[in-house]
Image (cartoon, rainbow, N blue to C red; front, top):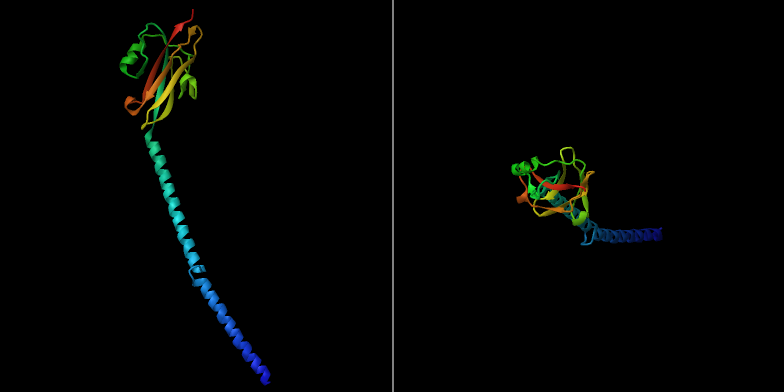
Length: 194
């Protein structure tokens, strides 16, 4: 019996030693600089940092689009097609009482087609407009108030019995050149075909 008690006591001591070693390893694994707790803290810090960076990026994007929206404005471009009765017609002018008076006595043409583009010679067409019974066609464009914008208007189709004007008109838009109602008027004079 004595032999059995000795083995049991040795087994108990070895078991306790093994448990102490495992406890030491576990404590080291959990609490060391590279342990579970340190890694959990690092992960928490990185998650919070990423959330703050994402929030900042979202705020910056919202601010950018708000500023872009504030810097954009609408402009109405009105094209008037009329029969040439004199050679001193207005070329390009802001819509005003004097301009309206100059065009009142001219015959207006319906069915004249125009293209509005951002490049010369009708490249990069933004819109196609056709004059109505009053000889006017209009389109609305958005431009940036902080920078100069250029549009080109070209007559592309003349009403039957008339010849297309050969000129292409250039509109240079900046905030100082737009009148209070945000309209620019272009007059195109057509000639009778022979």
